[in-house]
Length: 64
Image (tube, rainbow, N blue to C red; front, side, top):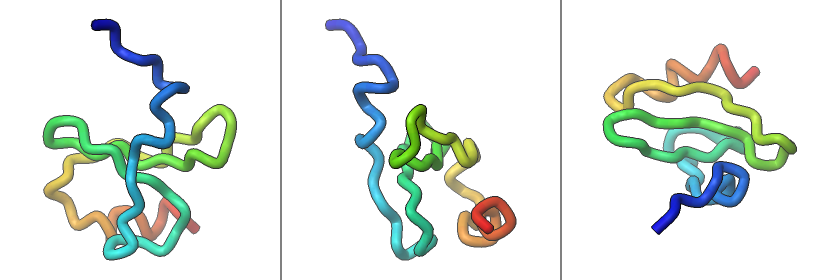
């Protein structure tokens, strides 16, 4: 089975309103999180980080 390309999976992430009110999606990959904005074309990768971080504090300066 072939993996679907990124542009076909861009809405696969999910909102985490417990972490941020900003319009971003989270996609876990192993122990990492890809945080991105799917409303842009191409999608905008906001950050890739370890899921064990303090995500709200990590995102504050990046989502202003």
